[in-house]
Image 1: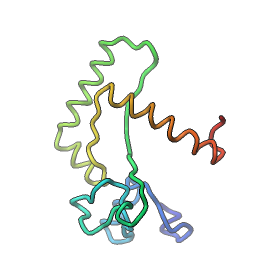
Image 2: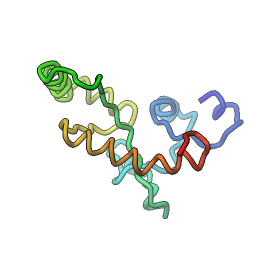
Image 3: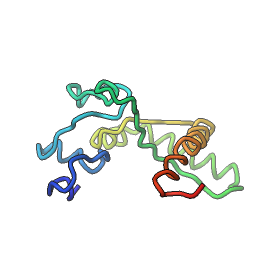
Length: 131
C-alpha cells in the first residue's frame, strides 16, 4: 500500500489493503476480480466486463495435521460455520470488499486440490516453485 501511495506501483490487487483508502478518497477502484459487481461498488466494472477473463477468490480456510480426530475437525468446522452467520462477520467482510464464501469440508478440499493443480504450473513458470 505504501508503494501505491508513493507512486512506486500503479496497481494493487489486495482489497484488504486498499479498501479503506478507497473509502477515504485516496485511491479508486479500476475493476473488481469478482464474478458480478458488488452492491457497495455498483459503478465499478468487473475484470470480465473489462475484457479480462479472470475471477479471483480470496479464500480463507483452516487446515490441520493429517490424522486429526474427526470430532476435533467437526468441532472447528461447526464453530466457523456458526461464525459465518454472525452479522459482525459479514460487516467486516463487506468493509474489505470480501464476499462470504462458505464451503463445507468436501467442497473446500476439492477447491484446494483444484487450485493446486491450476496454480502450480504458474508458480513454476514464475520461479516460485519447483516442478
